Length: 90
Image (cartoon, rainbow, N blue to C red; front, side, top):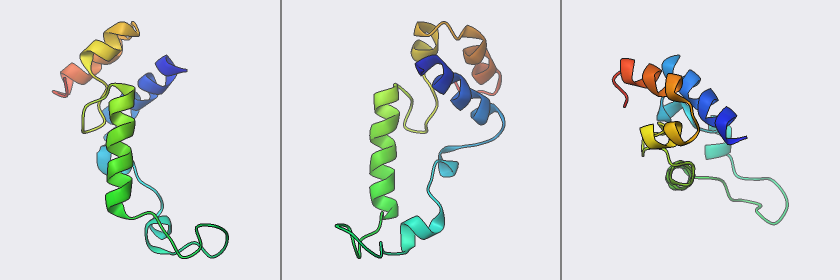
């Protein structure tokens, strides 16, 4: 659960992924839905940014999507915190 999600996020960050990589495929952000209750609508970049900010806050991550030192300590992921510190991200 939560430990795995945080550890995976730290792994991705140390591999070079950033907030800009937390996105949908371009067509989801530009092509309207073709059928159903949401026909004609799509997720705008602004809506996605809002959702990401709420998601990061719910996870106790920074606004850039980095798990906080406190969150990693609470999950006993001290090695992961150290990896982020070495990259200058904590």
